[in-house]
Image 1 (cartoon, one colour):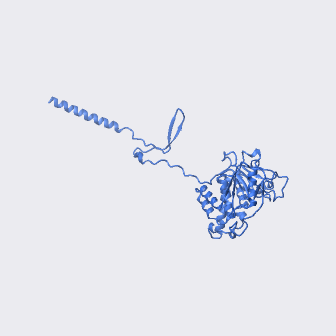
Image 2 (tube, rainbow, N blue to C red):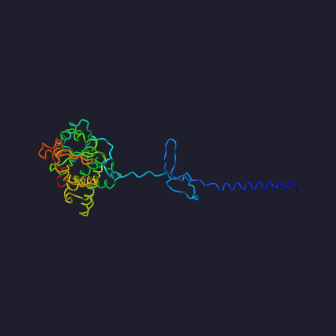
Image 3 (cartoon, one colour):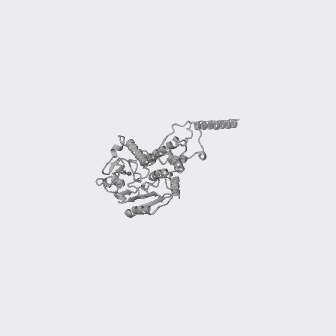
Length: 344
């Protein structure tokens, strides 16, 4: 009997020990779910700050195989640059000339103009787009902005398409755009006065009238808010023209355009640039600020050249407004019922 009591006592002691161990384990904290946090680190200290708040103790732990990786942010649209000023670290405007050939190709007079650029600027890179390569260029560079891409591809009028193309190129790549009927007289690296070279993102010249920017030659750094403003202005004008006649942009023709100059040309460019400068500078700004200036003038990050620079021929070759940089010959191949050259 004594042995029986001894064994019974051992059994009771074993059961009590098991119950005590189980009770102690039940009081331990539950497993912690690892969540995305921000890491503040230096060589001696690493801390993790959770950005999700306290996690309920009854929340189930997610198996590793079911956890989804943190998604990368969507690639931003090409166009929303809010302000050129302070945006650019690129020290200079790309030394590349962009031009486009019409459907009738390039005649001898235009070949001479093209060679003037290369003769005066031996280091100049040069690309001439055709109708087909221009469309491919826009597809490659504006795939993330389908509204602009689709509108460009839909336009049936050559001059409207060419006007929009120059702005798309200047936005995506920057450099110098010049129409084929322009002769270059001075090296491009002399166009910006020394004191403005590190502060200039866009260079425009006045037309012969002294209060409108010329569109036949313009140079910029890529991705400036000023070119964005022009693109948005032109797109809005084209859509408004189509809506006014109850057609799509693919159905527009020259009779539906009030004035090419106002819708996609130099007038549209001038209005968009002045509006954008006023918005960014935060002060009243308009034609009075640019009219008949006689020397290169920097407005924030946009350099405005007097009309001798890009329009000397039409302005009578003025002698008190700086050097003659380029000469526009006004070939005017777009001024026909089709808005541009057509195959004969």
